[in-house]
Image (cartoon, rainbow, N blue to C red; front, top):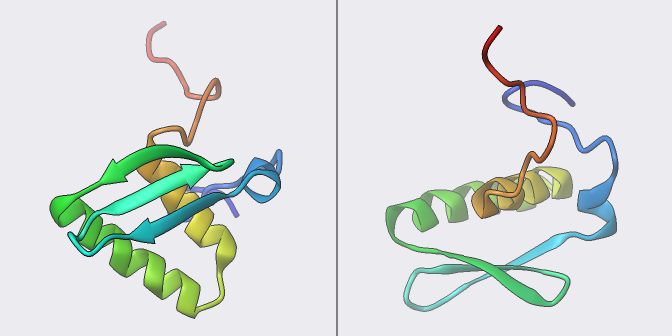
Length: 86
């Protein structure tokens, strides 16, 4: 998968060290990786993310779940961004 809607995980990091998540009663999403808390998502963003996660899980698409969680943490792309300029 590649492109905006289906980014790739060419190094397999999302499979080797996957993210985990859980929803709280207060409507927050707690995202962890390797047993350590990474980020708490709250408010409307948490509601949108939860809906997307549930759709991906019901479709059995674990890779999509991992991509959504990676994006939510802000640690999705490191070192391969294109830089502007001449």
